Length: 135
Image (cartoon, rainbow, N blue to C red):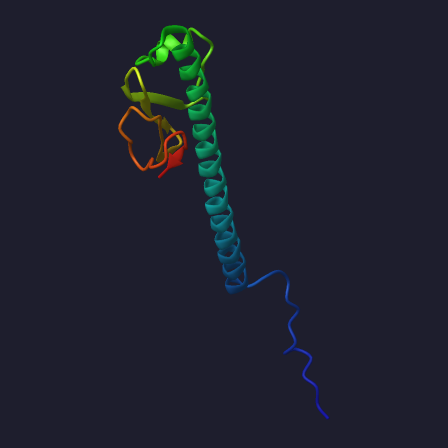
């Protein structure tokens, strides 16, 4: 039996193909993580918008209690202590003596949230009065 000792080479490190495969898998995993992080951020922004609209509704009711009309200006509610979350803004679409409609937006997402109170026309995807709808 003849054994060739010279044909057995000692391998140090990884081959190019092995390294390419490792980096490809790492890249795919990083991409999946980034997509998940973006999804979590978007949900957080929508939660902040819902909260802002609920707080806005409470401020509007307080304003109505004092003046018998709903405010058509967010600044007048800010003076009374109402503030939106950072990056959020609320636009009053309609304010009457008997209702209001508003739209909330955030710089971190393209989705909008809507809310209205009877006496004002429904806005956006809002269908039930007093309920925040996003979309």
